[in-house]
Image (cartoon, rainbow, N blue to C red; front, side, top):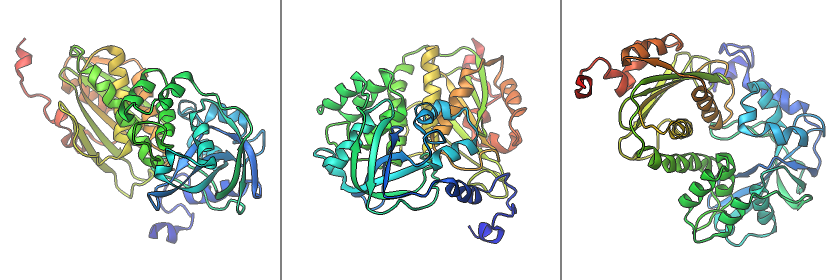
Length: 405
């Protein structure tokens, strides 16, 4: 932060865009806010973590003009992660800056017997389409554009006095069934919803608003995002472990929003390694690149990953591809983050960038060494710097029993 204080937007960090100045500019574009805002919630809801177990919870509503960023026309299309990933960082920041975070203080256990405001937020969370919402605040919403490594950015915030839903939420039948089943454990509920085609971000909203499981309670949004990726991933792992082993070395490559992925599938029982390389002048990094790694397999992972939510988001994308291929494999994923990713947008970026890479046609190789050499041609960080972080890559060239057959 001291570097930012000295710089004051002069570009001393070398980033192409100053996230602090961009925040100010986007906030300046917002119309002057009063105590009443009416518009469609994406749907999007937020549950804070400060003060837990007494937290702030409520929907996000647009502050923009009807035909500008944050309009109902945009929200239905562009607040879905798969669509957002097609935009650039600046466009996403502009769109999200128009979202006003509303909230009222509630106890997490109130999810079982919600008052009017929380019940309305739960109805919004269940919808698959934008929900007309009219919110009256105690004071005009204030604040700056908020960035977070787990969640999408959002704009000003305010305490809710009253709220009304002005259109009927569109609730998928499967969502309604699972929410009504209070005897269904949360992990099984997530599995059922995910299998039925409910996107993981929608599942995260339901989990956050305390609508899933037996012991129902509100879950802070940043926790529910990772929990949904993790539980959905574990649901897929149980299926992948029953599939035959991959016979080839397959290498997938792709990039979204300054997040480049190289995904190497190799013959072997399911293992998963993720190496993250934060290049200089990318968000969170300093003057030199930072490299971190984590892995799991063949047994269940113990503890929470040092790579935080991105580890589980990338794993989910990988497991989706393995399930589609009906194969299991030992996998090395390398995520290299460049200066193009100048503002944190949330863990969904990792999931969508990994999905993009895995949608592309793979290259096929005869050996692990050949695959690693090809990976190195698209990763800016030299192979010698990140290879020691991978157990799979360090084992390249070693003779194994399988090589004799």
